[in-house]
Every structure is written in structure tokens, then in C-alpha cells.
Length: 388
Image (cartoon, rainbow, N blue to C red; front, top):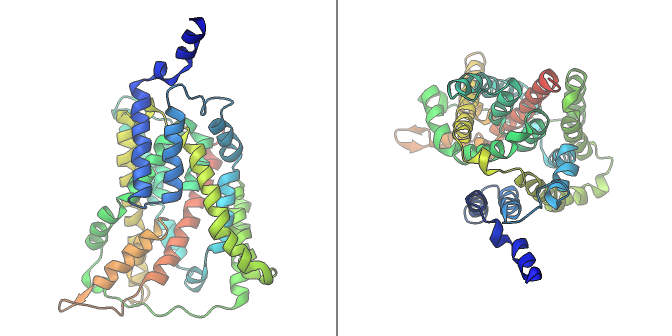
């Protein structure tokens, strides 16, 4: 009987709680988004599955010594997983549109307005709700506006790790709704004439422009913001590897490896590690609802900042810049660029579509600029707040 009693007490049936059931339900929703909706399938699949694993009754996988705990400690706290993801992105990324039109860097920078304004909003609103956030936690909430998951998780782990799980879900929920709230903002801030602008084809680039760009990008950022070196450094390294031609004979194999093996595997492990940080007490609270709304506000404000900067370029560039590319300054790659391209294609003359308006290349340049801008913003926040 003692053995049977011990067996019964060690089963999950004696550890069932409503919190565990609810969080496994959240994991199921994330799996549905990944499998049925195919939205960010690799990361959300592993994130949702990890949420189920870590909240199974009696599970110790997310507790000290458990598998998910160790995965988080080795991959996230060390910065290894985010850095490897940026290495893979650097090997795949084409900075050509940004090099051909350097003014897009201003668009990417302006799109980070959402980060800093949302930071201030989070401080004020959390005080009204009776649970004021400290400056570091508010900064992590604001980082949703950067729409750069590895970058945001890297910052959250260092500034407010207790908010990490909620912040990640809020970011992906906001990104999933981008196609709903961004187009109205774009139409509100641009005129029909501006949306009809046909941008000139991008100029041809020399090999040396492509080779020097990652170095030119790297040096000033790391001299001023070394806190972000693990991410920006490997992004530049991967891109220099791509463009230099030193490994030309094996570069095709490396690129294929980055796309088909490295990035998917690291992203899966990344999601498993982060999923163990989802907790019911944080997730099912008024605070989490406020954080989700803050995410929508942050991406909306980022879109506004990018569009206004692109409008400034339009008015100061003889009307050669279509302001819609400003919305792609938020680093939701490539969704934001596709939304900008779609709205440009829908601009009509007498009710007919104008298929000659094709903004995807320029919008992708703004997208990449937004990725860089979000990393610089993260470096500023980490430099100012880390260790406070």
C-alpha cells in the first residue's frame, strides 16, 4: 500500500491545477497558430509545445536542473541562441536595397519611435493600474515596438526576465494583427498622390560596396554601443561572409545550411527555452492585457514614425519617394514590406490598379533598416539600464 500511495502521489493526476490546464491551453493556441495558420511556424510551434511540457502536472522541466531550464540557461542567458540566429540572418540577408538608398536608415531609425514612446506610456499606465513598472521593465515593454524577437528576448533576459514569457506572446500577437491595424494608419497619413509614386529602380552596386557595408555598419555601432556586440557583430560577420567571396566555392553550401538547417534548429531550441518562462500568474492578469495593448500601440507608433520620415524624404526628394515604404521601417520582416507593396499596388487611377507600382525592393530596404534600428535602440537601453 505504501508503494501504491507513493506511486499515486508522484503521478501528474495529483498535481493538476487550473493554472497548469490554462497554460497548456495557451500552448495549444500557439500550436494552432503555427500549424493551422502557419504564422511564424518554427518558433511558435516550439514555444507552444514547450508551454505544454513545462506545465504538465508534476513536470519539473522548467525548474532548476530541468531540461528546459538548462536550455534557457545555456542558450538564452548566455546570448548564444540570439547570436546564432543573427549569424544565419546575416548569411541570408541582402543589404543591397539599403546600400543603394542609404536614406532608408533614417526611416528605420524613425520607426523606433514606438519603442521609446511606449516606454513612457508603460510607465504612466502601469502607475494608473496600481502596479507601477520600473524603468527596465517599461523598456522591455517598449521593445515590442522593435518587432525583432531575438533582439527583444536578448534585452528582456537582461533587464526584466520575469516579463519574458508575456512579452514574447504579446509581440507575436501584435505581429499577427499587423495586417489589420497598419493599413488604416498608412492610408490616414498618406494622400492618394503619395501612394501613387513610382520609385526609380535601384542602382547597381559594386562588389566593394557590398563588402564594406557590414564593416561600416559594425564599427561605429560597436564603438558606441558594445552591449549589442553579440548580435550586431554576428549579423555583420554573416553578411561579410556572404558578400566577400572568400568562401565562394562553399558559400552556396553555407547559405543552404543557414536556411535549411542552422536557423530552423536554433529557432526550435530558442522557442523551447523561452516557452518554459510562460507562467500563469503573469499571463492571466490585467498586466498581460495591458502589455498586449502596448504592443499594438508600439507597432502603430513605429509605423507612424517611419511613414512621417518617408513623407519628409518625399517632400525633400522631389517627390521620388513613396511614403508607404516608411511603414516597413518596423522590423516585421518581410510582412511589413509586403503590406506596403500591396497598398502601393492598390493605388488606382480611375478605379484601375497600377501594376507598375512595385515597392517591395525599396520596402525591404526599409525593413532591414528597421532591424538595424531596433538593435541600436536595444543597445542604447542596455547601456543605460543594465545593472540599474
